[in-house]
Length: 412
Ligand code: GLV
Ligand code: MN
Ligand code: MN
Image (cartoon, rainbow, N blue to C red; front, side):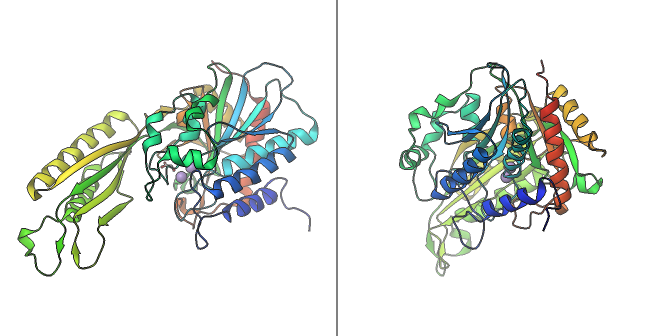
């Protein structure tokens, strides 16, 4: 049967194939420095080679495809997104932004087109931070902002990121060696599903991102006293989980009603974890974001103040570790305009919108001008296996990205 679309049929098959590379047979989970990361990267490397690119795994573990330009030394146009996933993930978050630029390069290659600058397509490692809590390792390494302190972060099995790097066959002391010199990357452009409902609500396939929210993530540990669930009277307990629950509700209260401010407790564990034992320890994550850093930081200060007060009242100990911090990042106005022109050239309308989600593009802003194109996803659902896209949107997104790539001129 003839393909209905120039790009989308093959791309959707590729996205399905990547979606099957999972650590779990019942749902999609592909985390940092695992055999599944290796398998997905090898698959992507093969597609990059077929598209006419030279491919390497860099010192951080990113898969990088390069399509040489006509000019020997012009700064490169970098495109890409991440290949890791959250737990029980959808198959478009991140992956779309790797597969689409490969399709664009394959098209240039087929037509024998060389642009003045090289194009590099990057499949980043560990954007999500699913395994160690600390995200953006691949893009931080390339942007030159990787913090070696992150190598101490541990997964649920107690394996540190540094140990996992060694077991994977990469040298943790050389992660930062793939940092690009300033001025050598002309721009970074990331295509991503919106992960929210705004484009669908406005009946638009594609949008241009104006700015990416800044996030901070903390790991909180509360320590009380484990005890017998049947014998210790309610008023005499030091139940760590109840304090954690109070903090989670306080986060909901503090983050409700302020535009762009959002707070999430996405992980919570009661220890030792038995039905008839009062939780002696609770460990949970706190992810707080806002469109501007001052709004976010004020909320975090209040939440940490409440945490101390709750633990004081309940006679519990607590400790807080910051795992990640990113500042709110604007996209470059000239890249926004180029993206908008490339979308409108498809004969469709578009809009500008901010990103509440974090992206590799925000990290790359430390190195070069950045831009993002958002593609509609069904009912705005993401970080969920129900994530879905329309083939016609994939086609439009890829033709718009190709147009952007062909029309790209370096910006100041
Ligand atoms: C990445 O998906 C994030 O925004 O946490
Ligand atoms: Mn994600
Ligand atoms: Mn993503």
